[in-house]
Image (tube, rainbow, N blue to C red):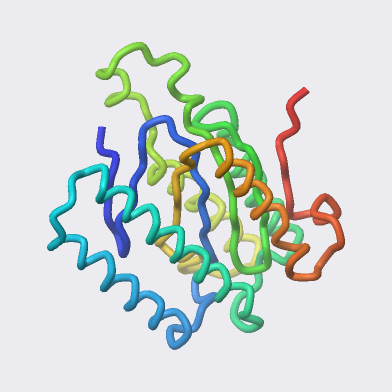
Length: 219
């Protein structure tokens, strides 16, 4: 089972891990605001290829760089007040919600999400898939990694959103940015970070007043 892949930036995806994921609408960041950030971090990641690091050290450096990158990337998204804001439309938001919940308890446990006007944060636990897998061969055949999950979420939600809007073409940016959850403390911090997005943006006073927020409540 492949646990690392590369698009613009390297991703580390341990089997059965929980993941914090951010993705955004196509064209939601002007190139002149996003390009300097991308170039800076591309350089840092490329430098890893010439450093004498073992797998554990390399993965730790990638994790740290991705964490720094995501914080800066998210800050850019919150500053933007131009470009597509389709997710502020309650009907478009509902289309995405249905797709996020569609695979809950099947491909992942959907822990929480926040749908902002031009981007989305969500937190899932893919350990759900391992409950009926008893050996490594079954993992290779049956486990759906995060990149596959993202296609299942973004593809149908893009198609249905375009249909509703009467538009066509690319709806989401192809790249999604993810970090795997390393421990319980990080899990708690990420949940708070996600749900507090609309509060920080001064859209609501309490996170649960925002219709784009969701947190799974265990009975």
